[in-house]
Length: 175
Image (cartoon, rainbow, N blue to C red; front, side):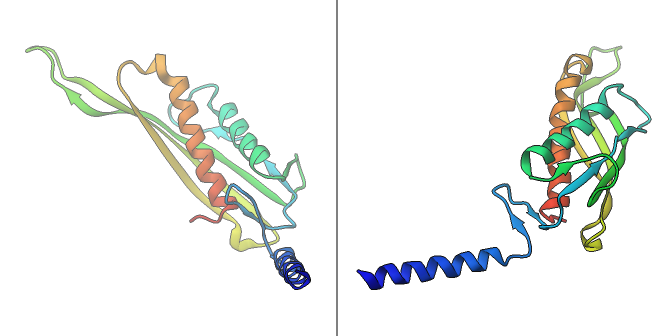
C-alpha cells in the first residue's frame, strides 16, 4: 500500500514539474498563449469597404475584444501592450449565387445570395516575431429573400466566424 502511494506521489510530482516547465500556457479552448503575453491593444477596425454598414466597425471590434476577453486571461488595454491587433474591414458585398427564372418578359432574379465580409488584420507580438502576421480573413453566409430584413443577423453570424478564425490564427497558431 505504501509503495503504491509513493509511486502515485512520484508520478504526480513528475507530471506537475513537466507541466510547469512548458513554454506555452495551454487552455481548454486550444489556445497556446506565450506566458509573457499579458496585455493586448485591440485597435478600432475602420470600415474601408466600398459598401459601408454604419455599425459594422463597432460590432466587429467589440466582438473581437469579447472573444479574447472570454477565451483568455489576456487583459485588453489601450496604448502600450505586449501585443497589438489592428486592421480594417476591406470588403462587404452581397452577390447572387444562384439565379431563378421568372415570367416571359421579366429578368431572372437571385434564388440565393451571399453576404461576404473581409477583414485585414495585423497582429504584432514583439517578444516573438514569428507569431506576428498580417493577412486578410474572409467569411460569407448565404441567404434567400430580401437582405435588409436579415442583414444584422447575417452580420452577427459572419463576425462570429471571423473572430474565431482570427483568434485561432493569433493564439492557436493555426495557419
